[in-house]
Length: 420
Image (cartoon, rainbow, N blue to C red; front, top):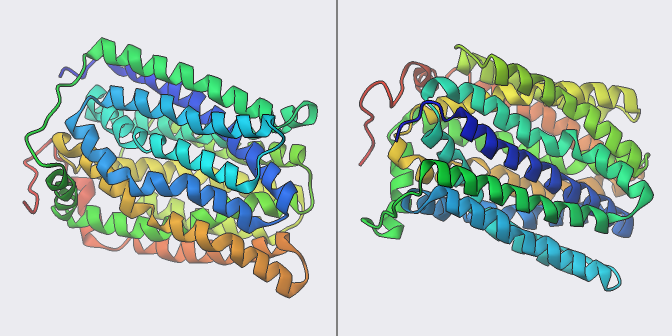
């Protein structure tokens, strides 16, 4: 397929994902505040996040196989459209007198199962549409779309919660799914549908995703280190909200999250316009080291100004890390295995999130109870420790020769050898 002059189609697809990210952020923020007000527990918030994430992790590998066997744009449409059903279920429960924790967990689980189809297909579609030279710009814009749930959603949700309740946020989220499905349909029509491939058994295709990773030691090492990194970032993701809600209201939380996420906006725009021209490994390691240090600073204070400053700096460092990871991995995987590889990469690299979501809330509640200072300071203590460990693990990235070699190789420039 001819990839040149496809950047406009990518932008259309990206716009749909941007809107979807904002809608998902509204739901995430609203349900987080709703659950914390109902239970006062960080563990309850973490449970909902875990159930929303676990299907995406467990289904990422088979979803990657599907992305290589069937039409990727169609899978995106199915994933985006049907994931609205879970949000609709929660909305119906709330309209009938209020949703309890088990009902919220059920709805989130349903939505997450269908959303699992989206990520490998979306990432593989980027490879379908763009040239290698456009990957870096695209990665910056994708990071920007992902940051929208932190940049725009919190301040919008915080304001809307002062005039309405969480049901309005759910309605808006459901409406955003319509636009994302339409954008995927237009792109699918523009580049044509993909003919289904059924030449291999499904299980064999899954195994091939693992073998592709094994073909590049540097890729496998990078993915393994990423799992440790996501552990500590997941802890921060879970505990930042209860930390702030322990001494502030929902509107203040929304403003604070938006200010912090502006760091991601600034970096995302810079990368989207200019991209990176080299030094990917060094930039990756240093950006993650600084992320850990900024995370530690975030947990040290119980005042909004320093929290916002360190939060801004933390989010500003993330797009650089995401950009470098995406480039180093994408350019070392053959095109025909992109879906399977990204599915396997998503599964392995995000195992840390499962551990984080399972233990972070319990740790914060326990430390807060033991110290007598409450869940907020318990969350702060866990965030501080996580930031220190993140900086230590990130420093390891700078040294392995197998990782440094990824910067000099590309599956588009020379034959790619796997362990097959």
